[in-house]
Length: 120
Image (cartoon, rainbow, N blue to C red; front, side, top):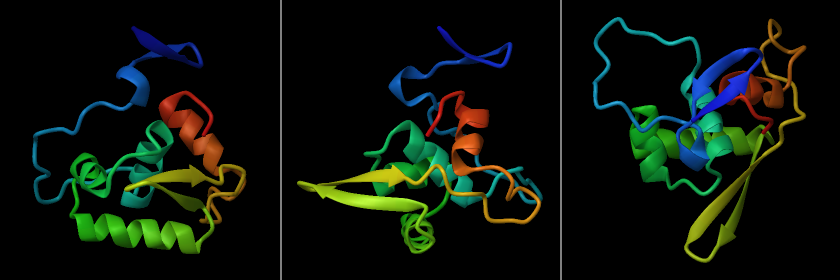
């Protein structure tokens, strides 16, 4: 099963659309095009009820780093949190523009759609 994205197909990974965390550790000098903040947003767009522990595993950082990223995204009004029992459910304000001047003409939803192939 795959998900269409502008003429290309991406593998579908169940309800979340994201692959499981890679068991390969990052090596010195490796870099990615997206920040950990973007990775957290993408993971939460795919599964709004992910636990901090699961986010940390998928993004490849510590739980403390995830807590800081979530706090920063909440402070920037990009991420909202609702407590449901013992779990959190996150909402993304997808209509907001991306923060850097180079990409500010695009929204958070544009980023989510470009990577996941679905609107936030």
